[in-house]
Image (tube, rainbow, N blue to C red):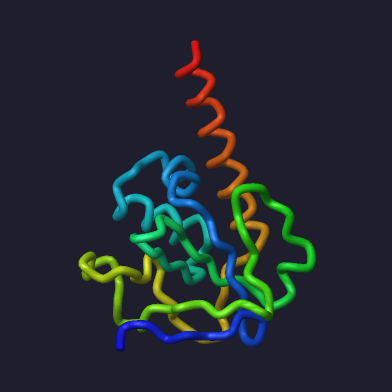
Length: 136
């Protein structure tokens, strides 16, 4: 099996971010470039993408949902279950529905929620600017 169903809020939780926001922040719709950007911006914190839904999932510390208030995203609470790809499935296996953009390298390492918020803020800002340019 390529995916494990894990409960959020036990060892980690996840922030779900639309691909358009990630691509805008990375300034590229090329998945490899977006993966590199996420790895650098999140200091190696684990991130995977569900290609079918067009959403990225950044694994963050338990408790993040108590203060998370970023538009266009969702923080998955303890009532959520998340289909997490096997750690061996990365961007080299693009046919997979879900794969790791930034694979986990140690179970206790997660993304900093503030760094995820900065990516979301930047992506939303750049998307808003692109929309204004299109409207002119």
